[in-house]
Amino acid sequence: MHSTTRRQWLMLSSLQAAGLFSLWPGAAHALPARAMTFPRDHGSHPDLRTEWWYITGHVQAGGQPWGFQVTFFRSRVDATQGMQSAFAAKQLLFAHAAVTDVQGQRLLHDQRIARAGFGVAQASEADTRIRLQDWTLVRNDTAGSPGERGGSRYTAHISDGEFALDLQFDSTQPVLLQGHQGLSRKGPDATQASYYYSQPQLAVTGALTVGGKRLAVTPGSGRAWMDHEWSEALLHPEALGWDWIGMNLNDGSALTAFRLRRADGSALWAGGSFRAPGQAAQIFDASAVAFTPERFWTSPQSGARYPVQWRVETPAGSFSVHAVLDAQELDSQGSTGAIYWEGLSDLRDAGGGTVGRGYLEMTGYAKPIRLG
Image (tube, rainbow, N blue to C red; front, top):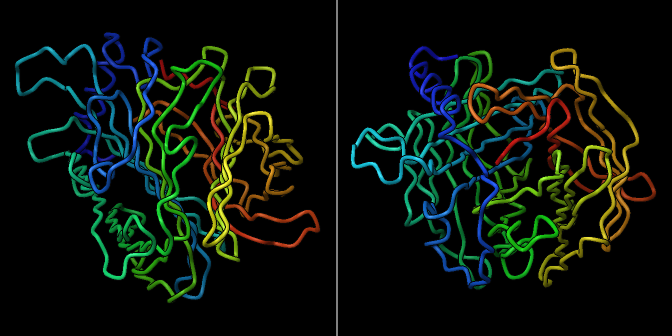
């Protein structure tokens, strides 16, 4: 834990203990379908309770393969909204960052938290411009924009004692609206939904630093995936956690699949999408996606048993997902309160050939996700 953020950690603990803080409260209204407008919807939506900007990817740097994750979260604190004090914690910002050292078989990660304001933490409503102390994520328009919605360049700066990321991510395809034109159902009730879009197949440039050694990204060596999602509420009361994949395929296609999971392991809800280059997205119905675990790994830290190999059935085909490194568990109890698995993984087709690479996320295995 950074000494500079100790007061923020203590502030969050105090809010949780007082019952003032909840990521995804249970009471919520159904979100209306609406057209997304950019660049406005690249920005923050503080009128809704929770939001995140999430970038994962893989590159070659210094002659080695690496995976990385950068996630910024925003959460509205309902109990303080009526307070007049400038010191009231009305919005909280969190951030997680991780690097998967494939050759060294290790995961490096860190986390931050602060209340919005005072120049320490902020998330612009006009566009993606997020600051959390010295960690930043900024989006700008690019020339020669692909597709009708325009192009983007995201710039991420993450500095930590063990690693640093100075990366740029350029869109090569139009924005991918998930669900029904960007309204994505996450459960059987209409209130369980989010506004959600992705930017797959991002070209990656820049450098990462590990152990004090700066490693330039090999040009054309990697791809990244960006998700932006915001909601008033999300999880059904029976949902213990979720399993999710975002995969950039070698042919330029993009595959998303997820399921919400009950305590007995059965699927409560599912969904996803597939988009081939230059084609319209195929949106998956809840009954059309199935996750079947094929191999497990047990964390020596938490004792959680994670499926690190899956069979995933979708309308776009049958695939298997294989963790590049089993030990990719992140302990974020100091910020969002969760212990979860988030890691670089390969995508294989029914014949066993590797057809893509991306990230697998699994929550609720160490302890139930309590977001409301």
